[in-house]
Length: 69
Image (cartoon, rainbow, N blue to C red; front, side, top):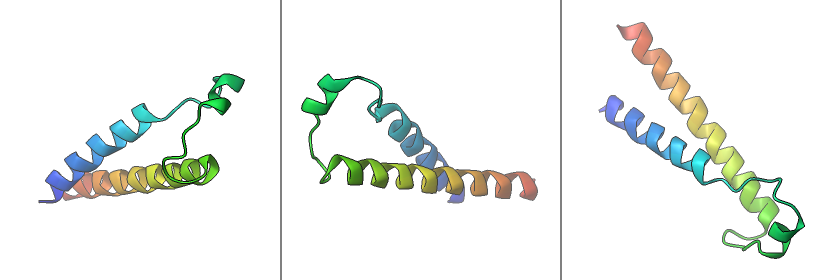
């Protein structure tokens, strides 16, 4: 069961990292930013926190699996 959670966590983490909008695209991206999750700063902060939570969870599960072998 934990390995299934680990697999889902890794897929979500890969998608989060790949779907992030690059920050260095110039002033044209500033005019076309959408506010899907509120203001752009709060949405970016939320995605950063979510990404870090998934990274830490992934590493903790990886350590657990390596110790139990």
